[in-house]
Length: 122
Image 1: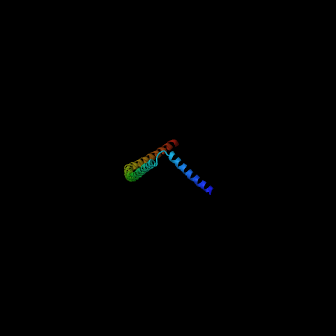
Image 2 (image 1 turned 90 degrees about the vertical axis):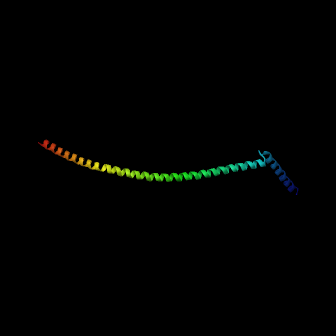
Image 3 (image 1 turned 60 degrees about the horizontal axis):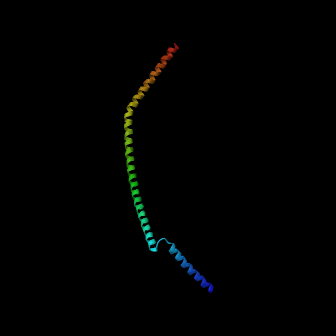
């Protein structure tokens, strides 16, 4: 029984000493500590709200940019198609003329070859 009283007394004294040490080592009072914790919590909540709002704004900007990009690509594609068609229409008549001139040059070269062969054989 004496043993259990001394253990209980030891726990009580140890608890009192621990509580005193905790109170003496705390840099601020409980009221100040609670107000600091509340202020920190409010700051964190404000930061979270700002991040959330900025996230929504970023999402809207990305959506808008994607839509604008798709429109620009469609317009660019249409412009490129028009330019290519115009280029083809411009080049086609010249291409036929060039082919005709090349055929004439080929014929002239063949005639020249035949003449040189005849002259060299004589």
